[in-house]
Image (cartoon, rainbow over all chains, first blue to last red; front, side, top):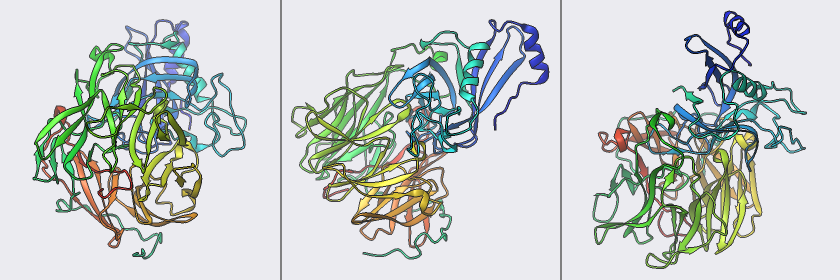
Length: 196
Length: 369
C-alpha cells in the first residue's frame, strides 16, 4: 500500500515555502517483511527542526537474515550514499538507482556489497516485458518486491498496474533536499538509515 | 537406502532447541579456535572468516589427508563500525579498509602462514590442486569493487596460474572432478554459477542462481534460484555440458519450503539445503528431483547444512542467535533439532558474537568432507 505520511499541516507549510532548495534530506528504511517494508524520504528546512516525509512500499531480500549474502535484506545502520544515476546500465540493475556503501551485517564480519535502491526497468527508464515469467527489467508482479539484498520500489509496466513509486521517490529526492548531481557521489551528505 | 516416511505430509514439527548438546561437526571453528584437527584443538593466528563471501564458500577447507587447513582471514586496516556510515567515520573513497588473505595451517609442523595475500575463497582438489580468488589489488577499499582473477596452483608448492580470462568479482566454491565451480558476482549481489574447464576456459552454468552442492561423482551440480529471480526452482545440471538433467518448481511442493539456499550437501541420491522455514531434503533420480522432507527449524535462518552419515536422516548445520553462532543437529526421523554452543563465552572481532562454523571441503569426488 502506498502511503503518504506528510501531515496536512506539513503540506501546507511546504506550499508556503515555495522553494525547496534549502531543504536537507535523507532516506530511512523500516524493515517489516521482505515484500512489504517502508522506504521514506525525509527532509527539513534548517534551522527549523520540523521534519517532513513521504514514504513508499519497498521490498528487500528474500530472507530476514541480513547476513545471508545475496538473500538477506539490507543490514541495519547508517549508510553513505555513493552515487545516483538516472540511466544506470549495469548487467543486473538498470535505470534510476542510488548506490549505497558496503556494510557489515550484525555478525560484524560478513560484508554486504553492491547495494542499491532500484526497481526493475531498463537503462532508459522503460520496460522490457516479454513472455517470460519474470523479466529482470519489467515489473510484473508482487514477487518483484523480492531482491537479493537491495531496496526495491515498484513502477508501472505494460503488464501490471503497480504504482509509480520509483518515479515518485526520484522526484521527491531531487525536489526536497536531495542532491541535484548524478554519477559517482562519494561522501554525498545524503544518507540512508535502516532501522533494526 | 533408507526411505523417508511421511514425505511432505504437513506434519512437520517445530524443531526443538535444547540449550546444550554434544552433537558437533567433525571439524569446526569457534572464533580462532579449531576443533577436530589431528592432534587436538588449536588456536589459529586469526579467525577463519569470509567477509566478502559469507557462507557462499567455506571459511576453511581441510586437505584430503587432513594434515592441512587452508582458511580465509581478514585483517582490518581500519575499524568499520556497522552502525555508522562511512561518511560519519571519515572513510574516503579508495581508503584501504581490510586485507583478505588465505592462510595455511599445518597440523604436523604447527605452522600457520600466509599462502596468498589479497585473496579469498578457495577450493582444494583431492590431488592437491588449490584454486582461489586473487584480488587485482591487495586491499579491499571503500567504494572500489574488489575485482581480480581465479588462480590455480597444482599443489601447495606450485606456481599459481590464472584461469580467468578477465578480471571480475569471483568467488571460488569447489572442484567437480577436473572442473572448477565458482561464482561471478554482479550489482546487487546477483550471482551467476560458472565453470572453469581450464585456463581461459570459463562458461556460465546457471545465471542468477547459486550452488547447493556438487554430486558425489563430480559430474552434476544442484543449483537453486530464489524468488528474487523468478519462480523459486531447483535444478540438476550436467557440469560437462550445462544440460538440465532435472528441475523442480518449488511453488508446487510443500509451501513450508518456499525457497532453498546455497551451500548445502549431496550424499548418494539426496541433497539437503536450507529453506525458508528450515531445512529441505530432496531426492535426485535420473530426470527427476523430488522433495522428500521439509523440517521447520525455530531459527532466524539455517546455514551450511551437511549430512552426518549415509543414512541421510541426520543433518548438521548452524544458525545465529544474539550471542553468536549455534550448531544444529537435526534428525529428520524425529523431526527435531538439538543445538549446541561450544565455548559460549567466546567473542569475535571487536566484541561481536563469535562465528561457529563447520569447516569442510565441498569439492567432489573427494574421500573426505
